[in-house]
Amino acid sequence: MNNLGKKVVRTAKRFRVGNWDCSNCGGTRISGRLKHCPRPGCGQPRDPISTPSERIYLPADAEYVTDPEEEQRAALGPNWYCSCGEPVTEDVDVCPQCGKKRGADATVGYEITYTNEPGTVYDQPLSDYDTVVESPYDKAMRTTYQGTDAPRRLENRVLPGNVPTIGRDTASNEDIRRDVAKDAEERQRMQAYPPFMQPFVQHKKPFVIAITSVVAVILAVLAVVGITKVFTYYTETVPGTVTVSAVQWERSIEVERLRTFDREGWDYPYDARVTGREQRVKEYETVVVGTEWVEVPDGYDVTEEETTEEYECGRSETEGDDGYAEITVEYCERDVTIEHRTPKTKWVEQDVTEQQPVKATWYFYQEDEWVTERWLVQSGGKSDEPAWPDTSSLRDTGYMGWDIGDERVGDETREARSVDFTDSTSEKRTTLVSDEVWRAVSVGDTVPASYFKHDGSLRSVDWDAVLIPLPSN
Image (cartoon, helix red, strand yellow):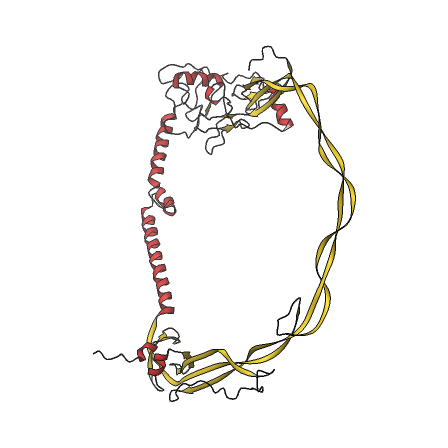
């Protein structure tokens, strides 16, 4: 931001945590607090000197540093770089990454000649399986000839295609290439097998694989067969019969009796007999009992004050190799007018109220009501024609109207048809049936039924079998 003509009165510095991308495995947005790639199987240390693509960058959503100790470390910044590529602050003389002292040279004893052809000249030979870790100088040279995607270190296991053909190479690289390609082929072949078979396939045991597959199929078949047999055992039925021992009918009529009930309330029915009354509080009402003077808000008194204020007039960001970005904010001054609002009040006269009870009459009364007293029941067998119970015995003492204790026929009636029968275990049972079945069945009839095979208990009775089909015209 251009601050020409503006007076900067102070500056403030803050720090944000940057991100970096791993050039080895392709991991992105790695926190600048981490010096190594956190992705499983990688662990690559960040080397912003030899690999510019691993330098810290600041995304739009980068978090601000709020911890005072971390902010103090970020303010120090990287004052020197170890030969392993680790940025180290000025107050530390030993690299926290590799343990080397400041000024140590990782290339001593390894004088390397780089060419465009495969092969490397050493001032002392390396064994075939040496692990090679490069210094920043070695890395800079290798990336010049091979590109930024070339690996920074050679271990006994590397990803396919990442072994360099020039620069610092060892005789074991050809073996590594073959092993890596073989492992990749093996992993692809394993994906065609279920997880439980992969260990056997990987160790090349075809006999064990065959046995395992056969056993798995047999166990699956046995499980299905077992479940089917258990289900069949408990649900399988066999045919049988039940014998009818009785055919019955029953009819019932509700009988109501006039009774007197003691009740109470703020009101009573027109035909009730009031037996008592009293005054009770029914509700409360608001009543004005006087006035008082109170102070209430009455707007504001507004005054203006001419002063200055600070505002942000400049900002710059510096992305460091220590994992943080430094934010420098410049503040300038400008004239402003501040409005002050002072509340005003006034005194007004208001009513003083209170809640006072309102009383009303609470009644005690008696009310006559018809309630269900009993049921008249009439029953019979197949030879008896169904009939309703006789109601002539109902109590009726009043010559005109009804008296307390009188009885009358209610509105509800009940009617049922039932059959008693004996099953194959000689257990007596009773069931309700339709009117058609009741008329068609007789004592001594055998009716088709089904029984559970495993314990001989009754499952169901086919009562529709007793219905005589109508002759066709």
